[in-house]
Amino acid sequence: MNSRVIAVMSTQWGLITRPQAIDAGMSPAQIDRLVNSGRWTAVRRGVYAEARYVASLTSHAEQRMLADRAASLRVKKAHALSHHSAAYPLELPVLREPEPTSHLTRAGLVGTHRRDGIAQHLAPYPPEQLCHVAGVPVLGPARTALDIAREHGFLAGLVAVDSAMRMGVTRSELLAVAARMYCWPQSTILRDVIESASGDIDSIGETLLRHVVTSLGFGVPEVQFGLTADGRTVWCDVRLGRQIFEFDGLVKILTPVEGGYADRPPTEVLWAEKGRQDFITGFKLAVCRVTWADVWGPGLEQGRARMLREYLATCERFGTDVADLAPYRPRGPRPRPRLQRPTIRLMGWDRWAA
Image (cartoon, rainbow, N blue to C red; front, side, top):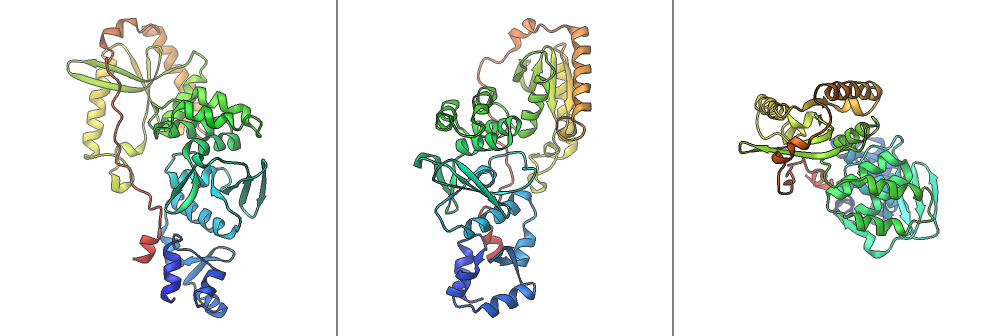
């Protein structure tokens, strides 16, 4: 590869199209030799990257961003990445699509055209809904979250909107974006999603947990229920009556290098969690610990049944009224946790260039 080819690839996340490579001085035969030898791989038809670079992208988000960027390079008309294709570069936590698709939105009348794994959405977007990530135009978090809700339904939309609010998007901003979609396909779901969302949810797992607890049919649960006493304050994920539901993800005991948040050895994390649970149950509250298998996938119904059993047993034992806990409620707002999340390398080419 000559320096002009490297320069093009370094500005496009390690990607180059066939016409760009030819314009940069390569012949069609040179391109074909690189592909046939296995040094280059076709990410999409006519869009190439170094094979060793593609193999280094091990996370789902990185793989999807490369595929979406390649799809974007194939479309000549002005567009922005949208839906899930915008969520990943924005680092907006969302549920995965059942069938991964590259989503591009072009200004125009409302409608969607799908072909070869690319969904081209014709829909207007005002300038304030557009932002740029690593030089690529993407629709912002509010618009992206609501597009995902229209595309994939209430639960996927709730996860996306919770994530957007956690990033700082306000409910009024979401309502303003939704107002522009009042006659678009599946737009009737948006108000329900926005009203159900909460900026106090800290993760996808907590969103799914709150959704399952709500589905038990005993009212809307409280999120981030706080207790303070003896110089200690704790915040519980979800409370319904005197039952506390805590979501346990593996990230709690993994270090940032391993993809988690722990800043100390797993044994210390688990010991501290035991002390925290003892503190909570000392208020005549019961704690139900929940994992991914209880709120997502084939174990969902079994998990819901277990949560229901524990809730009813707690009601029988302690009742549902929490008025006696009023003196132990924190007076100030909950401090938001600062999680040292592993950073996704949005550009990607830093690994390729190295």
